Image 1 (cartoon, rainbow, N blue to C red):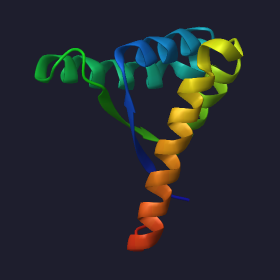
Image 2: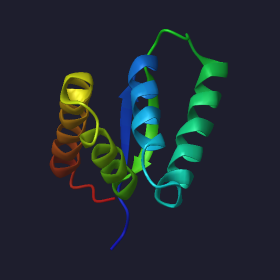
Image 3: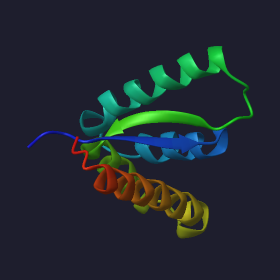
Amino acid sequence: MDERAFEISLTAAEGRTVFEALAEQPFKHVFELIGNINKQANKALDQSDKDAPTTYTVTDKELVLIVRALGSMPFESVHQLIANLNQQIREQGAGNREQGIRN
């Protein structure tokens, strides 16, 4: 089965929360994802307004790791971020179905 790519948009604060959540996970499961996100964040930092949300491209497997990591954090600190990610993914899924695109 092919991996599907998603674009997620995160503010700097949301990005820090994702990194904090991933840092609490076993390193061998998340080190590649942390490197991938960090690389994209550094590239975006050089090219855009620091206050603007940054768009990251992640695979479906990486997205699962992010959501699982966030799920292990206190609800009060992550519920809005998880809702935001859920909305973004639903919008992309609906757009792909309408266009007949399958990644």
